[in-house]
Image 1 (tube, one colour):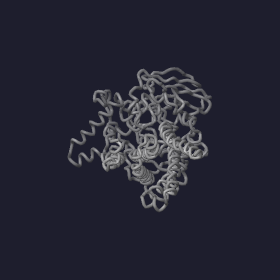
Image 2 (image 1 turned 90 degrees about the vertical axis):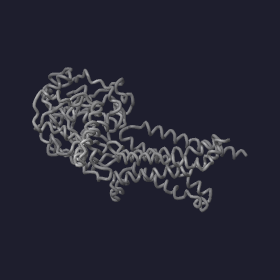
Image 3 (image 1 turned 45 degrees about the vertical axis):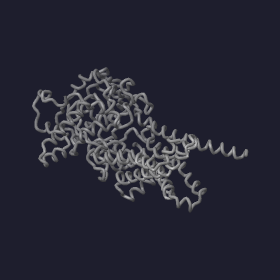
Image 4 (image 1 turned 45 degrees about the horizontal axis):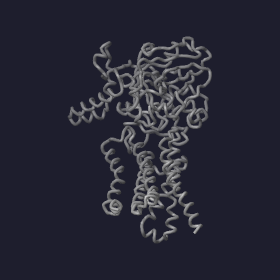
Length: 207
Length: 328
């Protein structure tokens, strides 16, 4: 189909990349224009966190969409979305370390150990770092496809940790509406995989 | 609408009471403007304030200078636009921008407060009458939110003690409970289950009688904007902001410690006292430091939070001998 072959063009790839960078450009623009509101640090920390979560949802939606719609072309955006998500996660962590902690490493260490929800967030970031570090083609070859895939399944853990991190933060003010939305999206995306895994397993067993 | 010269004609103001008009402006803006020799910049600042005020408030309310110790901090007041756009008022939504966008539906006229419980003069008192019970004073207080940010607000009102004396509590009254407006029709957040409505707060009688405990009707020289708790709210400057209940409809005199809404929602996290205390952390964040809204830049180091929000000299004796880690 024409629309599907459009997905394979170089232009489509660049378009998705630019779309993925728009939130970052928007934040840079707002910072420049003094438009971050009364509490700029909080705004930057929260918005970069929100975009990390959205990136996770989008990245994890690729495979279900690819399989359900029969659009294998979507796979070529998966790595880019993953790395964009990692970019926002890094920005999130940097904003926290810089604006909340004044880049005081000792204070950050104490804070990470003291507050479980920070600890959970940092763990999620570390797991994402492992994925980002092994995201290039040579790493796939070096690890071998099966091991690489197994390693990159930690993204499911990242999703759970990210929700826990968000839930814990919001629990302070018992404000769970958004947490529930993200949790439902991620749960259905992971649920799809569980369902498929069980189904495929059974199908293979019958053969 | 904001501060009409005509609305201030009823008396002459000494110099000290006119200054507030100036300090509420972003001083930097004015100074920058003068330094650059661009008068227009200053005028732009005034224009913006005018527009904001029209959104929020509906008239002037000037207070006289106060003689209460600690009643006027030397800290620089927070820019008006921040004080009316960054609010926690869950009755209008949980986002800090919600109150400024949605509070316009709140109906503050007519308004009355019901005084009940262990008190000799219970009854329903109209706002207009309440406002005459004592002389309006200007109090410039630090406001420390439990979330780790702070502001400096010039309030207009009188000591809660003036109201309490007027209604004559009975000897058995040990605590004061504050019940706030919870109207589903005008307050969209009340339909959500975030908290158990109506929002309730409480003070020990000696805390309520402390001259710094303020019944506020205005801020920045005008009637309280709706997002800031119009038409009448509590301000207890040495406690975390959520203790300062907004849009009061009931004041009850009781013999048992009231259950505040946040304590009810999370007993481990929000105690009855909720005094600002840098040594007692919230389970999810440190309370040792704070960010002053509108003043501390993005890269500025957060400032140290002061014991009792800097009001230790005034209120410290209220808690003498108490284990503040236990009674947080």
